Length: 417
Ligand SMILES: *Cc1c(COP(=O)(O)O)cnc(C)c1O
Image (cartoon, rainbow, N blue to C red; front, side, top):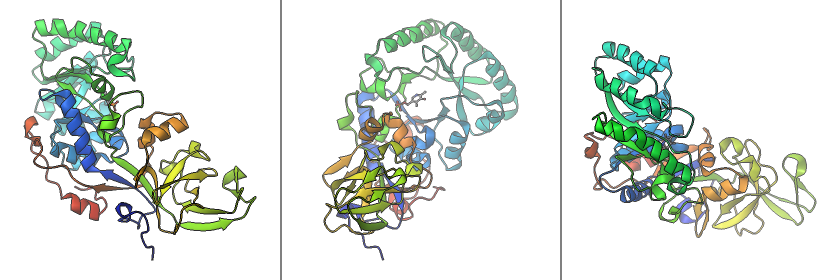
């Protein structure tokens, strides 16, 4: 039997090798903070692409809708359909591109898609003839990202074509900002000018409908003066902001990555640990083996350079992080046992390892850290948003029924919510 020996808050789960605690109360808190910044008139499109940045899109989406989020943003049609299959009825917008072969599934499931060419518009019109209902599109304008989206000089023409179409409905007009530091960047100001160069004449011609939106987390948290009709936060809802942005302290991290110690052993001076023997004991050392590695989201670059929390103490990762295992020096942790919880991201007692700290240590951005949490890692959902908070009704949508959070945490995670 593995007895839980971690601090009380961490003693709940020890039947998994490695797991991610996903704190839904933290999600609710961050969404409320985003709502304060955006103001009551501005809609919130929560971005849940890439499996909600590694947090698990289905559960995140259901709880976000309960918290009053107006719509969900995804990257691909399969992400959109996964949400529909799980019972999400809120509006879903595919922020990226949709392949021809995927269009009909999107239309059938009332998934809103980006529009960035006249060819696509004609094609959608033909398809809408068969699918019945109108097709809702968001015109995507490239104001400086240089990736997807129609250039500003072609945008009005498309807007007129949508207005003249009997089968297409304009759900919104959007652009995406390239600068990591949001409203503070000169490039953002330049992008907004280009955006306005389309919006102003479109307003005069009465071509606008739906929501105009452009602000990601960086724009929102650096006080972009005009947020238009909706914001599209992603990373901030998960309680993470890139370190150069203000406001991280008001957010609560949603994800914690944990594993249990599966093996303990004492090794003598001179004994190597891990591939290539990059770490050698300089004293008699108690080594803890953890059953997680870079496949699970612990970056290889943390080899000999990272930390974990065990019994509320920071202990160093020693040796190389391998695909399935990592090793800790727990010599100084009193009473350490097999079955103890090791926290790789998150809090244990007074100590905390933030996503930003790991990103800095390995030279990447925080997004990559949470997105890398692997498939083998069980997501365990804890807490629940308050139902009395601003209901989902604002978007005219009933929230899909979901089981209580208690049920979710007991059953770990059932994909069919
Ligand atoms: C990912 C994404 C966002 C969210 O960005 P964050 O920096 O995570 O807030 C918003 N809009 C678009 C188009 C995106 O692709």
